[in-house]
Length: 580
Image (tube, rainbow, N blue to C red; front, side, top):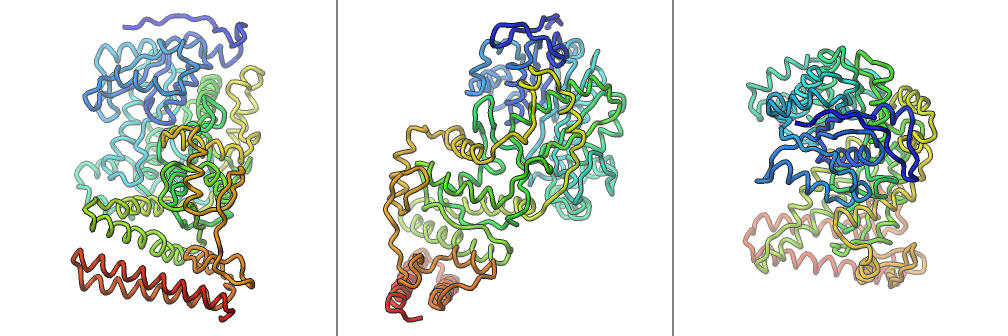
């Protein structure tokens, strides 16, 4: 069992001894972290190792998984490139076997006593972030898991600060989200009790009535956890931190570092591979994204601030851009599109393209024509040649993710951030500002988005940056123009006449985009071509419903493509001859 030691302030990178308010707070203390194996947890662990020099130990709750012990899982976790600059401090990290789902966190008597004696700061970031999690499981992880951590905090010999990571969207059923915890229609304990006897189907039926217009069980159970903390956590110095959409690292430990497909990263990948062609958004709504390194800095600073002020009830901080440094969805699309083309993936399905739609109706049409139809064609060919059809399944996952994300791309919230300002103002020492400042106003979004896209390519897709020139060549072979980074590409030869030189022939996404904005498309010929193609597609699907064998399916599929090709040739010829 580890003994509590007293450490002196550690040396900075230039060899001098650091003596600052925040360093003095962490000096000689030990930290307990849940969720250390998650995206946010990894960056938090690395930041504590690198910047909090006086920490004695960092205890990480890790369960056994896939025949791997907690020690083996920790060793694999610490192999990540983000820990390169902190290798000399890795001995401070101590795995503690346990499970957020188990009573008393599944801790052995010895490990629990070790934490009680030594840990004085607790970061609780473990959670189920799946939006489609069944209610019972979401409650067990997000609500009851929080209660189990809270019980441990009560037993600690000294609890200087308890930092609970929630989400900015736990009260997304409100237009304005203040720095407070709101009442729920149904008390959290009643929901917990009901979830114990309800099966998943019954719970799913009841969800619309109990979630109070929230989009998922994740957001609802996070709100319940906050209600639990305000009623059961009094007397414990506590901060509830509510990050918005957590994205790749801005500056540290590595620019653009991200390790999962969650959130915007998945859509960056799908767009770059040419799979995602349309999205339903309100383009001028705020895309409230926050870099993971700034979130972890705020977590660490809030622990110091919590202990300094001795909060006796939950102190809420909305970790959002608010009015500080807003970014819109339109800007994300406009900035990202050329960056994705300039830094393409080695494996692409189609040339990246498409556009966002401002109405659900036009987006559904574009999804059918530019997602479902190509998937049907490719999977039909795969079946014919004895291969496994996968594109339909891929688009199924994309469409489910799009359906969930639509709630956030078509709504906008106002978040109070007075407490965030208060904390920023209290970080006065120059060294503390350098180590823990989380002011997002100093960030330039365009370089950040470029680092984000490069980070997704390198760390998620595992593609070496050295392969970018080869990937550009491969992308250009699918047709393209000279991109913003100077990578040459053959010009796409337009089918349009001199009157419409920018036209490339009837394009589903271009037409849907213009129509969704209410713009009149030049020349009746483009609408005629689109209507003819849509009619052919509809007719072929009706025939396919009558003749469902593999042979007939492929026959009608190929026939459809031939007719559509003939229509395009006809449209092009009519355009060239000036007929409309």
